[in-house]
Image (cartoon, rainbow, N blue to C red; front, side):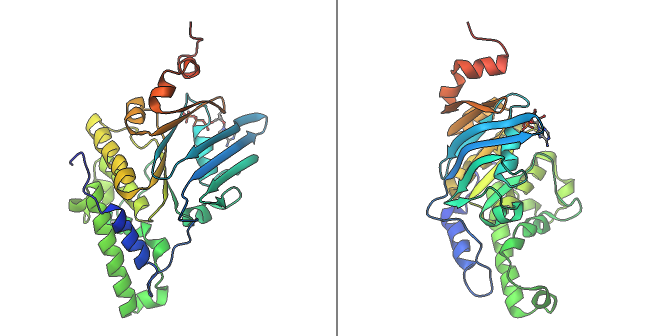
Length: 289
Ligand SMILES: Nc1ncnc2c1ncn2[C@@H]1O[C@H](COP(=O)(O)OP(=O)(O)OP(=O)(O)O)[C@@H](O)[C@H]1O
């Protein structure tokens, strides 16, 4: 795969978004599209006797990659689970494009344009790449069970449009030649790309990536990082990234929030947090001289 993914471009996404408003396709439920800012304010999560997140605040600017880092047990996964609706914050607020997310079920948050990719693979093993990506289009599909079953022209036109978009996105992430292969037979790095592509098929405004390069070879890490950068640069999608690979974080992130024992201990550009004594201490576990 090339370092710079070929691009369906922002307008490609916009075309599809407008296509979804034409008869025969569903208009996705969206947060205020003029403002895709994610605003996390004073979020606290308590489990019996343990404060996993303690008054954490940060802002993810539209079209940026925002990394959330910290040592083991810092609260990164808890933070992701709050953003995607798996956990409900004990207190505090998460607003996306002007919509309050706290208290919404995960599928409602997904419908607002927030797609999450889990660390572990979750692909149907025997489905082809194309079928796996079509699953990502499900939310945008209007044709009902009956129309599809009866192969009505409106349903086939819609299926054709979705397939076109699936091909564009597969091309964008470098999977154009793998569409007919069972996803489960691809190398690990490509399977992760299938998951990323499936999330892109949902036409999200915000992607939550949980350790996207964990377990990958150096080449796979480089290729995946290039695709993630392309998602931001070409599609304008905001990304929240939890990642232990500091090389990837430093290369990709526009902003970094650092957690330790549930508290936000630092934030800023990668260069700023890298030199922050509190961050050095958290990672090394000893005070700086
Ligand atoms: N469902 C839960 N019930 C009780 N405690 C939990 C739960 N989920 C997380 N915790 C605790 O909350 C704290 C933060 O955990 P979390 O998994 O968010 O950290 P993390 O930064 O993602 O760690 P890692 O990098 O090891 O994945 C830990 O002390 C963890 O044991």
